[in-house]
Image 1 (cartoon, each protein chain N blue to C red):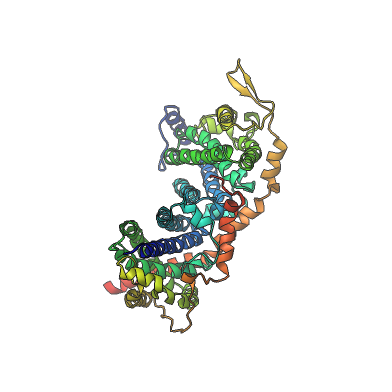
Image 2 (cartoon, rainbow over the protein chains, first blue to last red):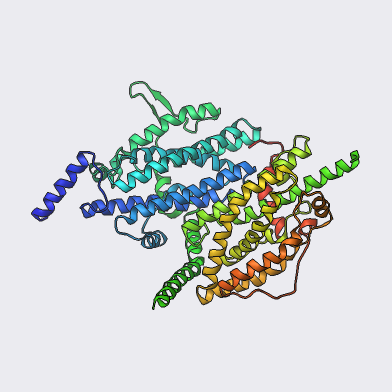
Length: 317
Length: 258
């Protein structure tokens, strides 16, 4: 590293240590840029792929009110995808490149969306638990060191809290409903609880990206701390629903001031990440199909824009 | 007016509000099928918006029909507990979403129609329907701008987009005629100043469609075929499948609240 780069890097780290935001035109280490592109694009892809499991129930929502709310939620998620792609573009990558990386499997999305939404209860569980877990992470990212990412998180968090409430409301209706509805709620809780805990990623000791990300304040809290926060906040929510907690070994630990819980089935976690979830292939194939079917529309739009520009130029000449 | 006339008139009004609700719900449902299927992310969002507007309208029309019906009926009874023959939406609205050109052409037809229909419904002697129209007319202005813009872009875009638009026009043309043919029920309500006489809208509708298609370098279809029957519950085979999906959860748990 040259003397110049060294002093740039020192200035960069000082800025971060002083809680100043890094902005698109500021100097940044290449690894910081890459790390952010990876994280922000992964986040954007998750929002976009997440349209699928939830979209799966728009046409079957059991009341018109639920249909409208779910449609509006899925639309918000697409909007989050947009802000995040735009935030990532400030780092010098195009949306087309990011989409390409997703479609060839180079970029990831949240593995939770490889689980199928089998029942209406799953829409409740996703809003409540999956969005709830995402919020834990995103609240902490409002203070992330990269300005455009931090600012997009502030807006996204507001909408996500609304999503979490709508999910919980679905669960509440089910839990206080008929016996069958309550069974549906319990089943969805049982299936989505553990995958939600997995959303925080591997234990800190196993996490490949954690250390550097913490130093650069891309991440502000560790996977395990955020997961603990989520576990603790979920316990009274489950109680209020009158449902059984899926973790039979869950126990309050007075000394730590937290709940102790069973170990996560990491084998399942890696199994799903590595392509063996129910929907891994389906999600990407769906995305590719929609993208390819839309190619002629995008081409037409470009062709029309070019014609308009040409006609304007001819009109002047 | 004697009692039985009043009852008949009330029944007409319920049916009219229900029809308008059916048009909105079925189209909104079809547009909502674009979630995660749009040609790019901005379109997922925009189509979601349009679908939401239509589902919102359906809720207003059905809620009014439910109020008039009494007996503790709600909007959901109208959406979820009626069968194919009970629905009275225009056939155009129930056709599968097709490709993007098909969706845009259908929207163009319906948006131009609504931009003429809703301002007249705003002057309805029935203040509930007039109020719903006042809300919807603002949304329709935006929808129409969108569907005109897209029609022009796709018609005057590439060879492929032009052909797809021309095919969509040909495939949809025969379904437009019934929108301009009020039946006996609508005629009774037109006489009372409640319903809109859609027969009067056809000329202007055709003029506006022609103008947009000309700008889009597209031909106005001349085909003579016409399919009718939506208002009388004579539907295409597609509606049954749509309802099977839409109503599946609701009807499996009778009496449940969601």
